[in-house]
Image (cartoon, rainbow, N blue to C red; front, side, top):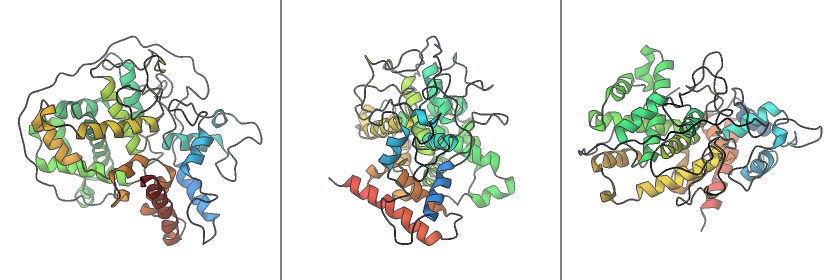
Length: 409
């Protein structure tokens, strides 16, 4: 259920010129599938939430912090990635086939392959390689004639339709492409709210179909009222505050649903799609979407050397998005050719934060998809165990310990 959204804030308007959007064009090379490297998305369902509640039920009343059976994020990384130290790591082979007695250990991690792959997807350990990890054989693939395959790969993984990808660009451009990505995801989320909420319930639940219609009809950002822009930011703020995993996204079909990414990873993938489609020329990947060792970087926070987004894990792409967002927001006003657009976007979206971040510094958002924070989101949403108070305390304590330790100088 959606809550009422906060009242809009007041921002200033300016006027500026339009930026030309550059799309790349090249042939689509098809790679040969191998189990852990190329594979279809896992089926729907929130396996991580089920595992967390299963683990809580096995704890005693006095356990807190990093403890068995709730494992620290680093333990999940080492268990589910073949090379945990690389941003280009494939999933561990035991997530596809397992010899009896091999890890994951059933007393610590889910033993069945299906649950493991769902959790790997939701925690950001998977990739977006062309042709296999994005809608293999689905009838509604994005046409590669409209977007370069490297763009489509990240966009399809994000579950954001080309309609909203292009609309967000038309309204805001790419000088603040990280915020443009946030707008695209927020528009897709709002469309989902409108489509799934009965008309009579929309007002009570804060679902504004008229605002969505005004966005869809707009030719530029000056057509959008301040209240609508603030509302869209609140849509994103609410969605970031919740743990939504295992749902079907907008790019699948009723017959073959496509698994949705958690919201922070969706934004990062759309941001990667914008970066791939604009100058300077993006050369970090080979034609089939695998990294080019000669040109691709290994550190997502080093913006001087691009990483190969399609071959990098979703979590690595999220690290890049966070660094690129901070860089874009730190630019001087004169750096923007359309200061009117930049001023409104920064004023409205720069401070969008999930509720769980509370009074923590902005750095806390770096760990949005770490297991300790995901578990805290589950606690904030409540659970079906019948012991919400102790569950809340246990899970929130783990998130607090993670963020406080990682935020120390």
